[in-house]
Image (cartoon, rainbow, N blue to C red; front, side):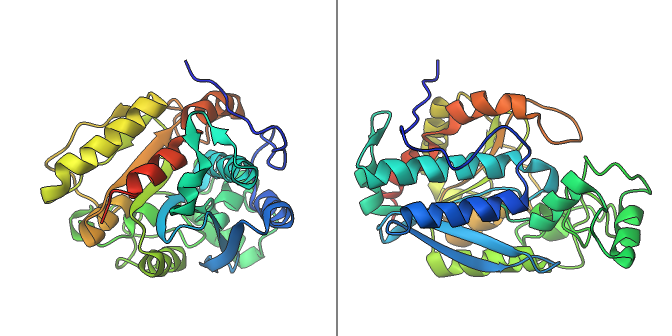
Length: 315
């Protein structure tokens, strides 16, 4: 059903082990070295523990599409997916190749910004537990993790705030449960409290994307509908195209959807299309296994370019 489209020379991003923040930084440096003339790299801000949050742009277009991975610590497979996409697109753009039937010349008009790992602290905690942290932080993390030393279910940032419950659209209606910092679901004391989310908000305000996507795990589903208003038909048409490309189902519109997430905020603030794309079959409270990556990559490899093509029509 899905043909793997792999530029011949692309080989920086390895998909055979867990994708850590350290590997992300190393891969970005290698991509800069190899594709520096066609990519732009910048730190858009820092995490609670001071790790840089990286943004990488490929293309020359004045319009932008933005793809964001790893709002949640246990969802680092989305970081690997976006880095793989970045490398493949960079290789194809450099040599003017196609990705399937899609010409890379689209990126002359619409650039794609990748923010592969919004929550580097959460990813590090989920993968390594308390190892390597100062004693006072170890103690806080254990409390937020119900005393367990297994951190495989960790979603929050290092402060115990769920980054995808930090946006103002519908935030007040979100249940305040838990009411204290926790490994998941704590919405914080106010929207835009977490450093990672502040960094993303400021960056989005700066680049003014035509379309935004937040990648998550899991469920192989696309959420696109939140108070879309007069743009409902337009936004649904784009979501259907991504559903067709990926084979993921479209989530049924929920008139009682509460919000608090990135795409909810983007749709209501910018009145432009946004999607939450959930990759991988459902796996419970942990990160999806690497064994699903190959199939999920095949489903998603054209998503960025399809969105860039759609972005041309959005004013």
